[in-house]
Length: 112
Image (cartoon, rainbow, N blue to C red; front, side, top):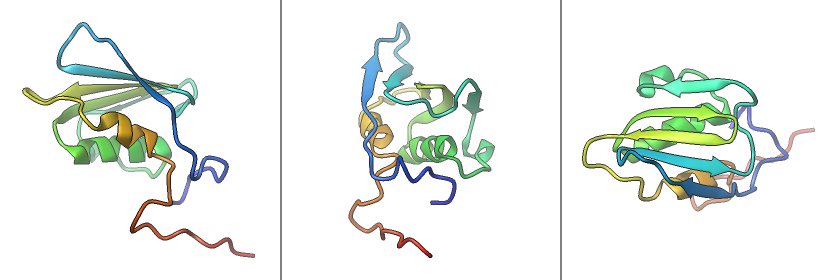
């Protein structure tokens, strides 16, 4: 998990789903910034070519299915849903972004 801040490793992110006037858009507010003051837009998984936490989150959201696009600005995550898709499970994906002690994930040993 290169590029992840060790201070964040293992810490859950607090996520709140915010209302959207569009049924094909899901909006989430986090208790921490993922991009600083920058905007990150992903129209498809092909747009993910770095290994930062924000890129990893977009990758995981696309892998969950039903996602046509992801926009992340600071602590706000906006997901464009595919027709007929819903945002079920996305809060958990975001919440677990920095959690490395899930079943099947090996904990990295610090090197001297």
